Image (cartoon, rainbow, N blue to C red):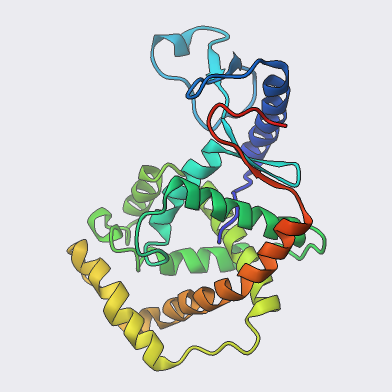
Length: 264
């Protein structure tokens, strides 16, 4: 699981965007399916700018995100789902197939529930050096990175940009992921052990086929054994999380909105 990034500029826009989404949706009549709601553009950082001739006009309308779910009063937006789908490029071995929209929304709901629990007992942020250390390892293990020559700074930045992120956004998103994993490890990983045969099996049956598909040279198992162990640990922890998350859903309020459906 991973957490939505909160960069200094992006967080301000995200907070404004969600608050404004509430105001506009509550004030407007029911929108037909597929219809977007727009408001005059405002000053401040934005994740994307409108394109075309209209973009150059002062006060050009900006389409608001559609709200896809509400978790204990916190909005999950369509842009969150889109970003989660793009972020999967940095976790190529986590899922065996591409996630559907519904599964991505469920993943974001689960993460939001976890983040809300984390907020009750905050811990120090993961240090910058640890984040950069994990990313340095990551760029050596992503199969698609070989075509980008991610061993170079220019190639790595190009790969990140092609997934729709800046370097700082990736760092914050990965930091958040590490913090969620730390939270989960402290509560659920005690007693879980991954054997060497399990690591060998995952390397041969899951990772190697991914590299072959990309026509890329795989790193030796010894270089990524820790990463495989983390993946396998997370898979087992996910099973333990299911009951806990089901309890959080039952105790709280979770609602998924379909296109065209009004917020309560």
